[in-house]
Amino acid sequence: MIQVNHLEKSFEGFHALKGVDMHVEKGAIYGLVGPNGAGKSTLIRHITGVYKPDAGEVLIAGEPVYENKKVKAKFSYIPDEIFYFMQADTMEMKRFYQGIYPTFDEKLFYRLQEFFPNIDVKRSIRRLSKGMQKQVAFWLAICAKPELMILDEPVDGLDPVMRRQIWSIIMSEVAENQMTVLVSSHNLRELEDVCDHVGIMHQGTIMIERSLSDLQGSVSKIQVACQNGVPKLSEEFEVLHMSNTGRVYTLIVKGDPEDAKKALAAANPAIVDVLPLTLEEIFIYEMGGADYEVKDILF
Ligand SMILES: Nc1ncnc2c1ncn2[C@@H]1O[C@H](COP(=O)(O)OP(=O)(O)OP(=O)(O)O)[C@@H](O)[C@H]1O
Image 1 (cartoon, rainbow, N blue to C red):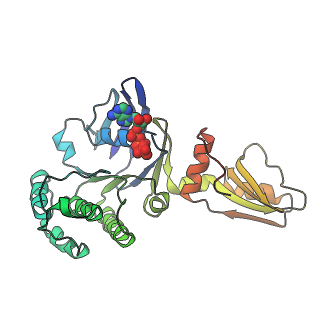
Image 2: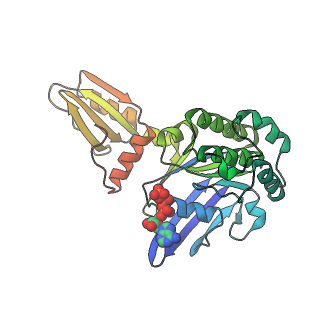
Image 3: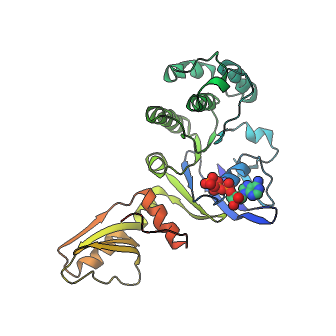
């Protein structure tokens, strides 16, 4: 659905995107993560056709997006800071959306109204709270029935119940209509629950792009208890981090978790356990490997 090839962008001599390659399949929920300043918003502004690439290309459904109205009608974009017309209320914004999106589903709009009981559709949107404004943005974006939904820090400002509700509406659109979702967020716990693919961005490139299950299968946390310190692992396993509490050692190991467990078990430890790593932990250790300043914040 989205194909980004060798995308480059500089701002007044500062090289913000340094040859980004990215691939998002139709029907995927793709989480874009990365430290502050990595280039996520700049990349999203290219994918939404706001910025013109200096070099490289951004294709949506096989077509370049920049200055392409036909392609822009295929996606809804919810930015970090939402823009509404002065004084417009939700009903007026609905009519505006209907003008832009031929696919807008008015029946769905009224059906979903029960999920947004606090929104007075006749009240100027600017006079709604920030979280309510975001609810309206999601409500309208979903009813546009886009092929692709692009979300930049989407659930900031939404209460926990509303966050779950909105994700469940989005996920049912993905399941029923193969909608594709690109979501940039720092909330890795939330992304872990909803994403099936992840791109980790660092210093203007996509450093890792994989399915979440692959990512979780390639780094693991292993606890091992031994009389005489921790057994040495062969070079095929990269130990990203090691700490201990008494005789119990915790290792973060890159490489097949079961193979690493077998290798450690050969030293006859009292305990050897493989524990799953969260997306947050994977992110922190991968960034540490990329010379990002990562302090010992997990142990
Ligand atoms: N319009 C601009 N002019 C000059 N520099 C810019 C501009 N937009 C972005 N940059 C620079 O490009 C780099 C990437 O910024 P970007 O906003 O894309 O990062 P980000 O990954 O979205 O960060 P965050 O997580 O903090 O939102 C930063 O160093 C930023 O200062």
